[in-house]
Length: 71
Image (cartoon, rainbow, N blue to C red; front, side, top):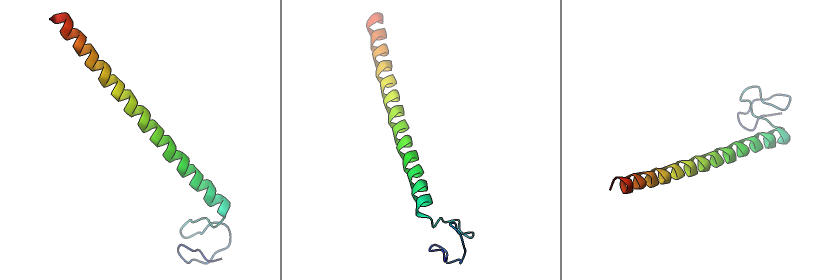
């Protein structure tokens, strides 16, 4: 078999030269893992954004309450 990425001739499911998988099942599994990682990272980023936005909102409320109590 000839690797479609680097052109090395080999036998098996993985190119010994560049490491590319030629088995569609292995390639699909790898793509699924990458997609899952991206989704998890986006979810964590959204959660952190919400958390910091909420903290900033409450800090503003606390400052306003302190100003009211001082005045």
